[in-house]
Length: 119
Length: 106
Image (cartoon, rainbow over all chains, first blue to last red):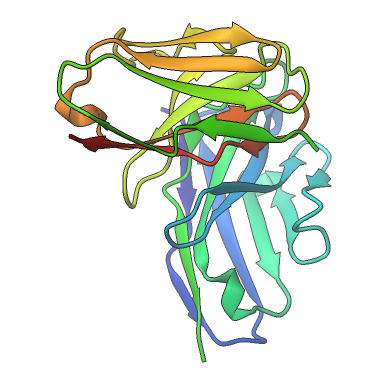
């Protein structure tokens, strides 16, 4: 069974760093891109960027370039989303999703990680 | 960047109604369009991919159509479990989501 399991909810202060994770199982991790999607409270879905776990090549939305870093460790089938200095405006639910490199099909999503940034 | 314009933003309907949601792309995306259903506190669930292909396990009352820049999601007979928010997504060039359509009980 294909699964994407994300790390648990986080509560952080502004200026702190954070890395959240997304662990894939039940499939070949390097055969699918992993994308990250932000959903601020009561708002719509926003694509942040993606990574090809086979070579760690990344693409970022211009809205998020320079604000977050996406990485992956294929040895443990895990992708990461990290911030070096959080802001209150980073408070949101973050989802990872698996995309077929050839077909673009995206049928599997993680359960989401809620990040709360508050002083 | 490709922009996706979804309408309406809110839709009030009754059980049994036929419901249609529209999504327009700012440039041609061929058939690289998906539709998702999202319920509060849950991850989006894929309903339709490649504009008109029904995802495995999704009820046949859901259907999608369109090509190029104009797309529609139709629910042929609205069921109680269908009250949710629906998003279109282009994946022709990276990803862009529409603004969402909340389907409410009339």
